[in-house]
Length: 184
Image (cartoon, rainbow, N blue to C red; front, side):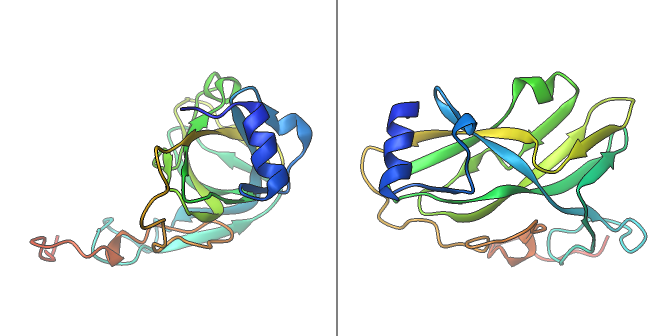
């Protein structure tokens, strides 16, 4: 069941759900808008020949109030808000329609597990042939919350728990079985 603005306000007031900082206009009828932070990461293309899933990736860190995403480029960004979900609520990250209409795809693997807390790292992709200028503090995406049938027996406590600022991929920490490292 998707949570309404009334339920979201009640959860925020009780402290069961945390979204900080938050302003009243961010609460929509069935979601909460999140704003763009000022911390960004981009793959260091001068240091990496190929992206490998079994090794840490080198990123260039950028901290500023405005950033331009070149055409057909990818960038990691953080939300301004720190969130904390209870064990019986999950959230979906969705791009805002107004943002999608300018050709900016916003993702974060689309899902936030119950029990997660931290700033969200967003994957941004400019699908245009023109650059897009982004400003910190602007609403960039929305979280749609859903109540689970019961609290999770093991809420999220993974490798991104408690993250602040933008965090690059930690896929190299995955404990996959049967996927040996290969030289490329």
